[in-house]
Length: 144
Image (cartoon, rainbow, N blue to C red; front, side, top):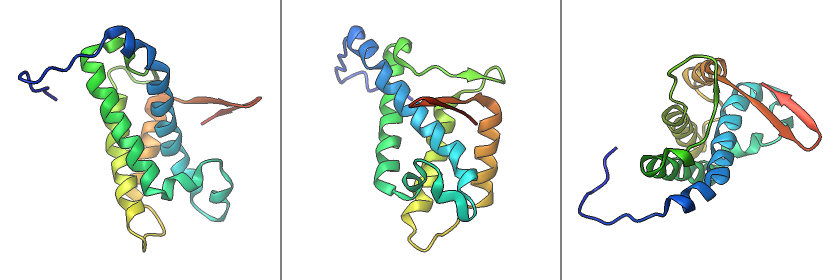
């Protein structure tokens, strides 16, 4: 990704560092949704917190846009990028998150689509194996 050198993009590094928790939250949300996708298959899928977000194209579009902004800001200051615990060295999570969220977003825009493609589900499983995912909601700890 290249920024246009003719335009002046001035963002204070301190400002970028201050939005790092927001960027981390957005990345964690995207990761949570993608790891939730295989679990939503079947009749009990709607019981998971956030399962309805996988069918909401507006939410998914917003998450996509925020991931792009995080990537652009990361070019300015890598300290604002989200951090992940990887099980495989060298795995770049942000591009994979964006690519998979885009595929889910495209599927959610098709009103006739009741199920996701098997390839999307397989890639979500693969991502779960590449990134150590642990979420804390309220008093409970969920590990996927």
